[in-house]
Length: 233
Length: 133
Image (cartoon, rainbow over all chains, first blue to last red; front, side):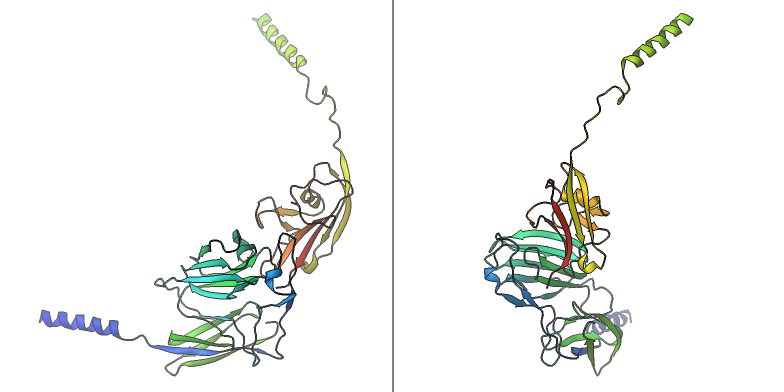
């Protein structure tokens, strides 16, 4: 009798462990209403003769802070469900490059605990600065083709990267503290697979358009969400 | 007994008289040389009225010293040194909006605002500006 009970308990345990978590697909688009905004054109100028900008392209450069497709889709928006921090997140290593006086990519979305390695592929000096809100967390000069600068992010949040020599250069590193994060593609679409079923607050943030949130319900039929911004947030 | 006490008091009086009170007998210190300069503050996108003042500063003063004579400032590390100007009249750099304080001295920028010594006739400008990004 005891043996049967033990087998039953162990069997139930195995069944429960193997049963898939009920999850769905949350997908959608991020759009900006109204006429397609024109990219800001930035004059590429040198602060001093010590810092030439010949390799930066020019004479102007289109800002990559607000990228909108012809159909109005917004790239580089970050979306996340309001959820508890996941202690079992797997950290990763991501690469940020300085290329033709731009940070590539413009936005990195990585889990908490991850490492970001910053490379200088340009033939000129850059001045790496990392900010959280108004506080500067790191400041380093980086000569061309020298060793990568490595940052480790142990706290969730948004971090701004800037170059102190080239004022137009910026990038964002967003640190996720659970798995239910996504970023929008160049056409504005996004997908969050394996999102747990239920009711949630969905947050959306874009560096130019701002932040918004809405309540969503995700069931077995999945969920489609259209996020709309009007220009100026 | 009395004479011993009197002797002690006498010694104290003699000691006091032989040590002149500071500032009374010393020669007056020469007044520090003062230099006429101009300070201009442009708050730019911070939407505050600008200031421009002519003032006399002690020889050896820096652009940061001159600024502090016109408006309240806060020191702190913005880039590289804790002696930098972190806020002027409550306005701080804003990395997200790409807004920064820049100091110009007679239309040049290649100097340290907390080390450079001012000369008579110098024009110091503190300009808050938003860079395109």
